[in-house]
Image (cartoon, rainbow, N blue to C red; front, side):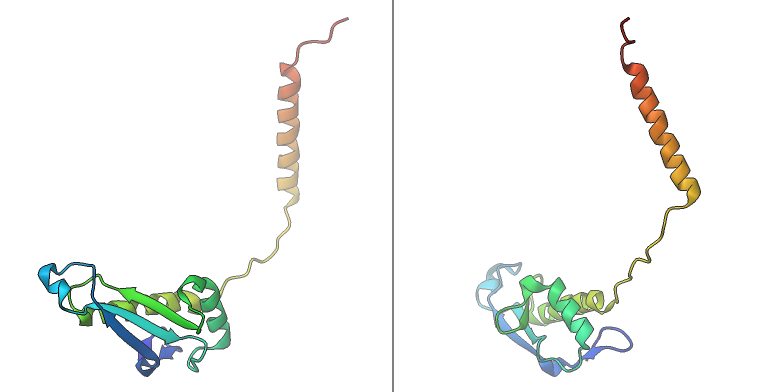
Length: 139
């Protein structure tokens, strides 16, 4: 299980991994070992994800979702496959933590009388300053 928060968990059986040769660190070993990990997760078919979180996740990660509705995450940071798999899972968890946070909505407010008065006084002072910059009228 991937723990997102106390209410949200994604079962590991929903994740699919594929492996390929990495272009990352590893020296000569990199040419013969499939250490790059690619995670595929069907966000569309996941039952564990509540609908609002799914919608937010899909909006925030449009570029990571392919035509099949799978989230694709790659990792080739490390020399061995296991650490790259763990890195993929951690990247997915970080994305889900961001999507799981409910957005805070702004409560509309009105300017106070004092702030309106200060704004008008500032505008009058600026206008007066500009008026004083002009040459005096000719008679």
